Length: 315
Ligand SMILES: [Zn+2]
Image (cartoon, rainbow, N blue to C red; front, side):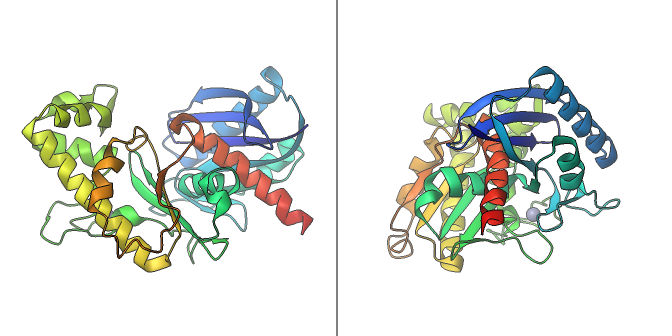
């Protein structure tokens, strides 16, 4: 059986796992990392790889591996450029380093483009050459497949749609330095900021101070809590507007929503009636929820980078 190894590196945790060609997770192991510096993170990644090979091992015949990682990556050179979106340190040839350890080719990409690759190879994107994958998790970002090509950009920084200004009248600052960004309104971190402003601190989880528990917020909104209703209505308006703006840019036939904030479908039900049928008329396959469970989409995405690498080598 041909298999692919995925590395889902999210900053505070690393999930390593082996998948078959259908994207089924055969074996996996989760490691806490907690690294804030890139150098430490690379060391930890190599250490965990060695541990995985020793303690978990492989069920099939490993063909390739993929790394879906936070920050900025250069897919073409296999380098991990930085852990954040601010430039820091020298790029690390992470794909080559892991290829040497594993004895198979390794591809690397950022976390959202990895998830987009998972949709492309194994999810709703299998049936489309033009789709947008929007990830609403702690942050807000997107991956674009246009005319059968995944868009990366001149600096591997495409898809940062969370930093689209959606409301010029909203003067709250965003981490990117602008005001009125979508990420401040519709994301786990955006919900947390607004919950604090509305004195709705019960929706903040003690162990996740930077990201609100979206399902708790939605429950409060359903129960009629005015603050929760205001936050979620603003989020639904913003996400609907963002989807329609992006549809106007790349003309997709499918829009896929994934990530912890949208995975229960609550927000999508609020968004759907706000979508203008005329704007959305070309989105013939609809606005759909990802079929992957949020806990595994990063791993499946990472492994699918390895699958694509093998396909490209065959060409
Ligand atoms: Zn921003």
